[in-house]
Image (cartoon, one colour):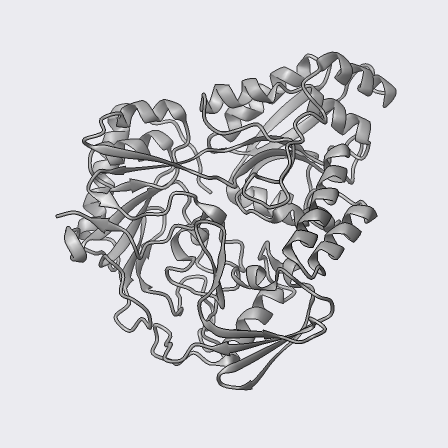
Length: 503
């Protein structure tokens, strides 16, 4: 997550040139740009990692740079949403579904040279589950009772209850060398790339790992250049300081890249949802009538058009169309300001109320916040907007639950399960939803899982647990010389191994 600051066009062009110069001359471990198989892919991004450890609140930037590039897992979440084995060569499940045995792929080494062993996998799972872990997927592993490593090549995971999603959940668990120690500033993974250098605030460089067990990447490495302003990012591509922009923040920017001989615009499937999340623990957001009133007070179609034009989509829940349990629920609380006023009156708030909306200070959150403020004013609700940094959001909202309402984007799919956890930051607590989500996880079939989650989602939406605003489009822009990059952006990941730059 990045901080947004205003820049003039002249300044942004200067910034892009400066970044290019830094990458070529002074960044630690800098890789020289080239074309063909020796190419270093230059990537522009707004999402710099806060640190390099995804259990330490690193932000979505670390998923973008490190998922399946530097670190691998037992399984991989592919760009199309499927899950396939990576470091696991075999997966056996007991008849009662409570014991999962994984055989590890042979010939795998960490970047330090140490061989992959079952002890490393055991350590990696346990560090995500640890009390100190800040991983957003920590609760997804709650069904794990114990992890055993009977020999170097076998991992046994024993569950408290059945978990049909275990392979998917394990795709979020980076396998880390158990001897690596603190990995907030360094790494020791098994992936096709290793860390070449990180100049905080400027760039992070990766280089191809010669000892990789699988097929070699189609490039020599990649450099992620980090920008605090979307205009600066766009100008970096225009001035050939970067080859790819991983996520365009505004449709207005696309006009800059309209020349098909110079640029390629790819629109993939997104799982990124913009939501106004309430702290459902505190008044008046503990009242379902208030939450439903706010949902009906916002013209989400007009909001989406204001930010993304004809791209993206209005959603009526937390579930994107890429999930098997998706259904169109936009009609549950449609735009209806008069109905919203009536619901507020029924809740004893006919004169409205005032609340503080804490929102990250990077696009499009401030614009969305101003739109919500104007919409809710029409029904007598006053919104005080407080812009905060990504770090402050994580500490104050996500960790401390010290907020009334917040704006945030959620990038993962299959994340309806968070509504089954009353300890999650928004504090939604419905025992029936928790039961259905638990039963879904214990399902024997994917169809059974989908049906239970569909039922849970209908209740969540009827409760207006949050205000689901829109689904982002997933727009990747590159120069025409660069191909082979992922376009869907599931879980904010950006696979590098297939990216090529023509000579």
